[in-house]
Length: 188
Image 1 (cartoon, one colour):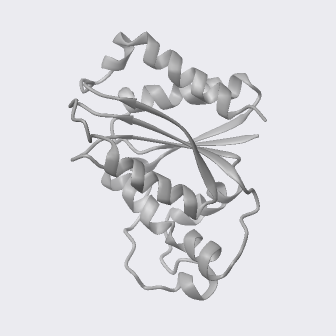
Image 2 (cartoon, one colour):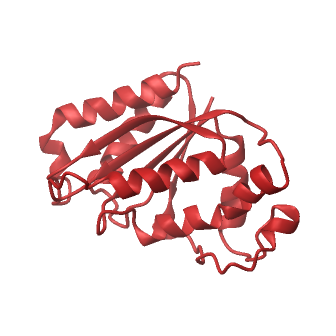
């Protein structure tokens, strides 16, 4: 069982990062092989709509997405984690999601089935405000991203009213919930 964690926050050691780490620990505790990608450390250009992917399923832009595509295809579980920036995922994460248009093209235009299919997907999100629709847009984005990689939206952990770096440590239930999420996702 391969679990891929995608950390969309630029704040290492922040709330999103800590929750994702707990989810990955939970998966590892069930014997899963885990990998964490820190998107902010990568060079990922935004999609430029060249549409080369419609021909052969490959993006014509050469950057760190070249290493991400195979990981998205072979994982059994993907956990996406992001703080809310203006009620959406971070720009760094959105660039990775938008560049997954190549995988969408493989699935829907070229009718190629991913090597691991279906897989499970989960979303961890942290927002400073308590707005009713805080996560609505981000959930839609993540769900459509998951569709492109043939992952079922299987779990979510949405935390409101948390902003200061490391503040999530004051919420042991949230950390325990993240660990439990990882455990459940890693079960066969």
